[in-house]
Length: 162
Ligand SMILES: [Zn+2]
Image (tube, rainbow, N blue to C red):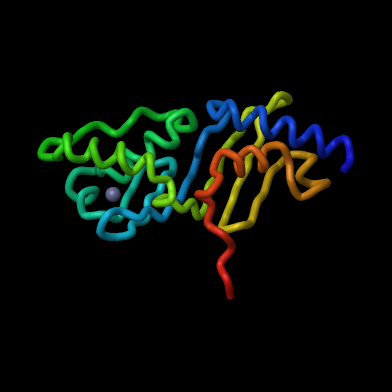
């Protein structure tokens, strides 16, 4: 293994231990709730979930769980509770869901990662990685993509079989 690669792996470990370096710009997740599976998205207009609760209240336990799991990497305030929302039951669900990460399948995302030598844009789409760093151009992996793999371990959707 070349020295450059070893240094990329060391940096990936460091970055993964400091998740506040990461900022999610966009995210698409398949979320297994207790009764159904929903799609959660985050983009410049905020959170969205396909569940009925979100349609009524613009907040739901699925997004509240995502806010817990991704907290240091979301640089936006949590969604406010809504009138008529069953806050006690939703908080209870969100806490439980956040401990059950196999409910979360990350389909795609865009992040910026603050590396030691500057910010890098990393994206993922069902198995396809991209990063704007030199290391990624040279090797097809970088400290930034490897850090995101560590952070999202067990939650990344695999490439779709054709
Ligand atoms: Zn929801």
